[in-house]
Length: 106
Ligand code: SF4
Ligand code: SF4
View 1 (cartoon, rainbow, N blue to C red):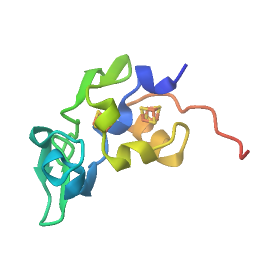
View 2: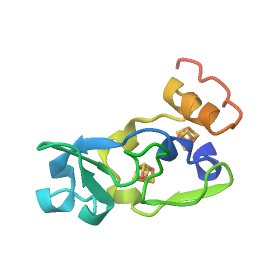
View 3: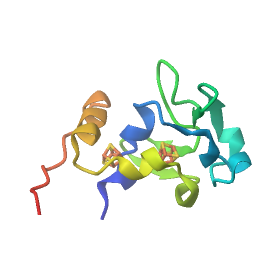
View 4: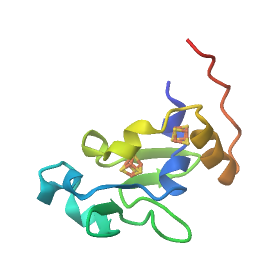
């Protein structure tokens, strides 16, 4: 089972920004009301550009049980964070969670 289901740390650590057209009004799938404008070309997930980031689409409690309410429509950066990657471990560390076992190269 994925460690992500009881984690969610990366959704509450980084600014999740992407090209604006990934949002619904640009033809993409991300609901516009869950985004905020970064600049003319970029948006981010609402809540991830604050001092204590937390994505507006994240439900549940970080480190216990979480879910992404827009999982099938989540923006591209969310597809890129890999479980056990350096970014993942950094996020987990920030939330006081134990590191995941390192992934060995295939
Ligand atoms: S920090 Fe790592 S384990 Fe936690 S949700 Fe993100 S990718 Fe999954
Ligand atoms: S859209 Fe979903 S996967 Fe992406 S940061 Fe928000 S809660 Fe996490």
